[in-house]
Image 1 (cartoon, rainbow, N blue to C red):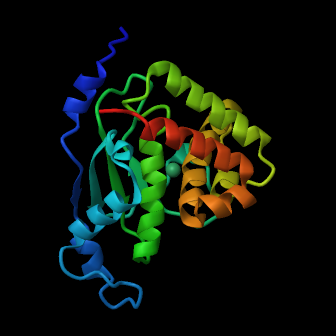
Image 2: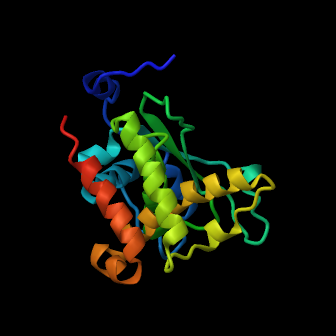
Length: 221
Ligand SMILES: [Zn+2]
């Protein structure tokens, strides 16, 4: 059965963003020249996020955690050609998803503020995609999936070694995983390059990300 919560009920489920476990990252990479974190590291991550995004971007997430374990990429991604572990993970979602989820970051070879920021950009994009954004209506979520699918097939400029490497014997599944990762990579690239630069290099991805940032950021509480 399809149960749709009201916007008020969904918002009531979101009780603020908790950030935990990042003290461990600062300890592990204390010797690294790129590690400049001192003091309350969880608060630093939380401040970085709230400066980077409007409040609406956090509605579908209630926690960001660092998990001190190495994880492999899901087998269905079929990635063999590049060396990659699982950097982060957004909670599993579906079109029925009604509760805010969590983001986990996993142990990597090296960390600094810049690559943690990129991983967070990528995972928050997943938390705001068609399966996990709890505030978009169901028709909006379907439209977002359609827009991302069209942009991915039409784009002439987009490049991501990660997206290119995804392989699954089930070609329909492969296409779906690629679009999911395309959305997250496009947002990560948009945030890294900045909107003005990204508009010049990647007009298709810029238009997709800008359109949906505007829709999501316009959601009134
Ligand atoms: Zn991803």
